[in-house]
Length: 216
Image: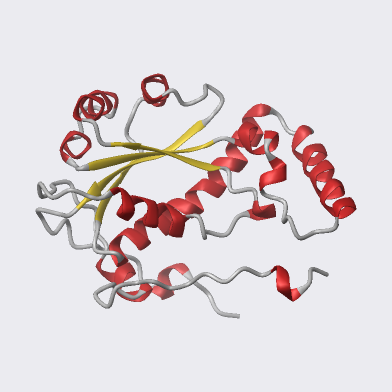
C-alpha cells in the first residue's frame, strides 16, 4: 500500500469567472468561427496541465500534443483536414495524438517515484511484459482509447476557462503526421480548434438519461 504522503495536491487556481464542470458540460458547443483574440501560452499551458489530470490506466498518460499557432502551418493543416475553415481561422490548433511506444520507452517517468526501488522495477517490468505481448496496432488502439478520455477533459476544461473548441476527426492522419513530425506509429486522436468564439455554435441535442441508462 502506498503511503499517504505520496499523494500530490492540485491547487485550484480558477478565476471567479470560470464555469463549474456542470455549467461547462451544459453550455459547451462546437464552435467553428473565432474572434481575432489571441490565446496566450499561459492559457494553453494551463489547459494542457489540467487536461493531464485525466484518468489513465497504470498512469501511463500516452497522450501527446502539438500546439500550432503559425498561420502557414494552420493553412496546411486545414488542407489535411479537408479545408475545414476553423483549422485555418482559430488562433490555436492542437493536434492530439497517442504514442504508446514513447510511453513504453519512458516508463520511469510514469511509475510513481515514491515507490520502493524494487517495487518500481517490478512495476516497470510488468508493464513492459504486458504491452510487449500486444501487437503495435493493438498498443496504439489501447493508447488512443486512453487519449480520448483526456480529449473529453480538454474540451470541458477549455469551456470552463472561457475558451471555445471544435474537435475534429475529419482529416488525413498521414498528412497530419508528416506535417507535424508525429511518429508514424502514433495515432492522431483529434485536431482541436481553440479560441474565443465569434458564434454560439449549434444548440446541442442529446439523449435523455432514460434512453441510454438502466438502473438495477
